[in-house]
Image (cartoon, rainbow, N blue to C red; front, side):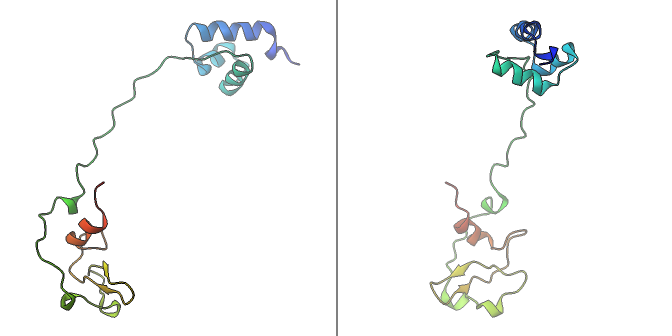
Length: 128
C-alpha cells in the first residue's frame, strides 16, 4: 500500500475535517490526493466532513399563475354545434377533445404556445 493511506495521512485528514475543512480543501493541503479520494478514505475510516457551507443564492420567484389562468373566467358553454371534427382542425385551433368514442374538438382560437384555448386550458391544467 502506498503512503497515501498511512495512519499519519488518515490522522491529518481527521484533524482537518474536525477543524471544519471540506474534502476539497483537505485535498489541496495534502496535495497528493483528489477530493474524491479524501472523502472515500474518510468514509472508510468513519471521518465526518462538515466543510464550510456557502450561502445559496435565492431562487427566482416562480410565476404566480400561468398566463392562461390569469384570463378572465369564460362564462360561455361549449355546445355540440360549436364543436369541430378532426379533419376540420387547423394549426391555430383548440385541440381539446370532447366525447367518448367519436371525438370532436373545441375549435376556438388556441392560447399562445399551448394546444388549447383559455377555457380548455383551465379544464386541462387545473391547480391542485
